[in-house]
Image 1 (tube, one colour):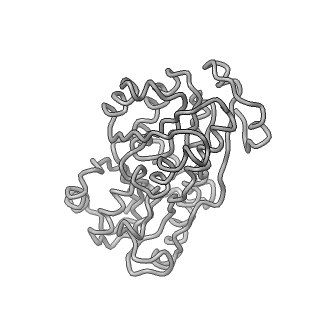
Image 2 (cartoon, helix red, strand yellow):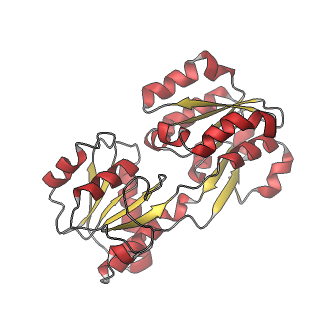
Length: 293
């Protein structure tokens, strides 16, 4: 039976499947067949029924980059191993019972790292004049203690106000940028979150249209024309997931493969993109960049 990649209705779902295939061939010489199943990942109650209907038993592995889907697969107790890569904390979400050896037939990568203060710091360094920063994400990201701390303490600690905007779908993203409060901010922080992951092209368009300083949480956004990016390095995600698939194919139990955290963070800067948008970046940020576009 082939691998199964389960995705929400995101714009780059086919690219996820291709990324896995390429990583398996490049790193391990494995030309495994892989199929894509797209589900409405917010409907967690309905996912197990869809999984059962899709005949999961006998799969080499089930892979997903959605915390909602990973939780539903874990709760479905499928005999096929689960490999996940999510921004949520897998133990607190019930995806795994332990990060080390565990009872749940799953392993993966957790990108749940607190980088939000660094977003504010890098944005202030690049654009010292900003005083009111908008941060847009879904309820999970905005509910994390570090985000609540930034909203409360950034005025005293860094001399800026951080305003949190919640969005769960494309319509809500559009409303944020049309709103008076959204138009009143003078810079944007766009961390990687499910709503950004599902609608990244439109989020980039909306932020660029403001022509205000900004920083995104995924390095590939520089290729889409943004000025700065900072965060955990997602570029090796499919390589690491392919390594886990290979270990499972070689007889290693998924329960014995440690859940890992990101090994690197990045700071990407594109002076050319910033100039095209009329954004002036302070040259002090240039020596800090780990890559340029």
